[in-house]
Length: 415
View 1 (cartoon, one colour):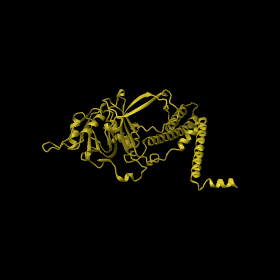
View 2 (cartoon, rainbow, N blue to C red):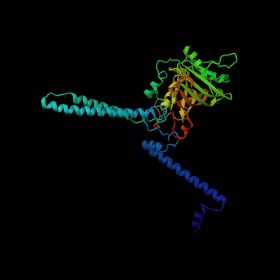
View 3 (cartoon, rainbow, N blue to C red):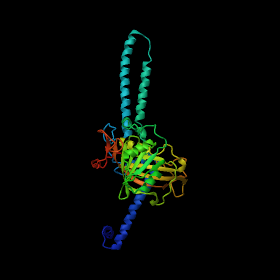
View 4 (cartoon, rainbow, N blue to C red):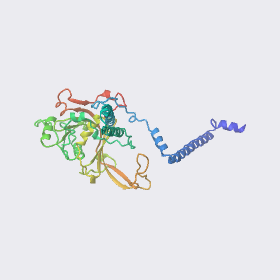
């Protein structure tokens, strides 16, 4: 009877100290069960690695990026939110199926002709062997197109080889391979701007760049953007940048690809210069490496191609500098780092691959990063066909423009 009374009082007792002790005991019991379940699961996963992979896939957090939706259309225009990799993969599969159907039709036709020939002649033919070779080749292409995805889902590097032919035809100068190996960039500002120091920082970010301030003095000529672009084009500049300001802070960046456009208009937020970053380093004059991450749609591929034309094609690896442009939810995060390879400390883990196993050859190596600055967040607002809005003519003068209704659905993105 007494034991029954004690068990009933274990959940609701009037003694505060007894209640606290019971709560601590119950919490320890729950933690013990969790720990035992964790070690038991670890032993099972060591015996069967497939269980760990299934658990990781099942426990992925439901973020907005993972809930991203795509337009179910076969369109590679700038307004379509389609994954270029999946779209081209789908087109390759359809092309392989069409080739198989054509090969099957030709095979049936040749079989009927062979039957008629066999009635008249006993001579053999090599058509069957050719048809079998064509069918095998078509099946191999289809199998290659339907191969499994990579085991490294965290890899978000942009593949500019997926550029659709429509973009190449619409922007031939931007996608031309005849551009300079070391692009020249002219950096300027709006009239009577005070962002001279910020413009100089952009010159350190983009190699082979030159800053020319603009003035609106009453005795000076107020050069327009088209006049500046004509001046820069005659002096072998490949791009012109106009830094816009508001309340003495950078709020926008216009990039004109010479000689005739297009013009990209970006808004700038969260501008932080390098010397205000904790633990920052000082940049050198080496050509940096360029990382373009997560530019997946036709608009994203076009934007990534623009950024690719602003840095030299051959980086100087001895400088160990890297510029990253990471797109996430249509915001482009600009960062510049210096990396260093160092020995692994005793308290650190080795580098692991996507399958969770240690990478061979780099067991005792780790990588350190030091941010150099400046850092900023860009957002694409408009793309003009020519040099600015005034220099673009025709119905397609504005190739793409951001509108507020585009963000009505939070899981659909443009870049």
